[in-house]
Length: 166
Image 1 (cartoon, rainbow, N blue to C red):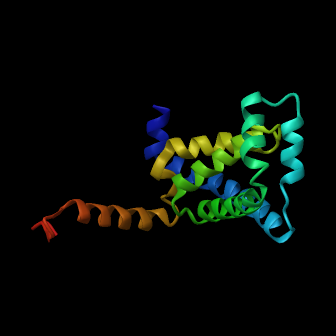
Image 2 (spheres, rainbow, N blue to C red):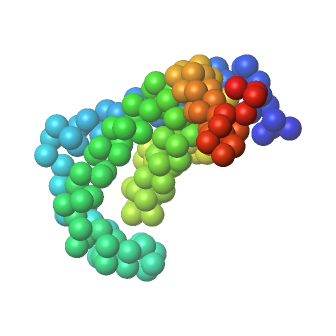
């Protein structure tokens, strides 16, 4: 019943828009601070790897993948945050933006950074469960309609000819 309400209710769409705008603003501003402030994740990553309270599998991943490729993460993290924030604020590809935002939130949570990532992850999960209803008050109303139209046109294209329906 709750999932149906999240996915179909107009009231839910309004509430999710508020969640979306809060998350978007938070991601956008954190991303912009990192982009404009010379972000360097190397000290943070090395500290997480050495933290005895961090799960071994996560520390192994960070030590084996993130630390040796810190230059890549120095680009991915700030621009990822910024673009997730932009997508959420505009309501454009909301589900994809939210998914990547939740992944980033859990990455920070796994690394021992709880605030505000726990709340952000929870709000993001509500948006993910709501699906397209979370972006109805935003660009998704038009973007997703056009994507569906293009995809339907391609699936109805038989042998190089467009079917009689189009």
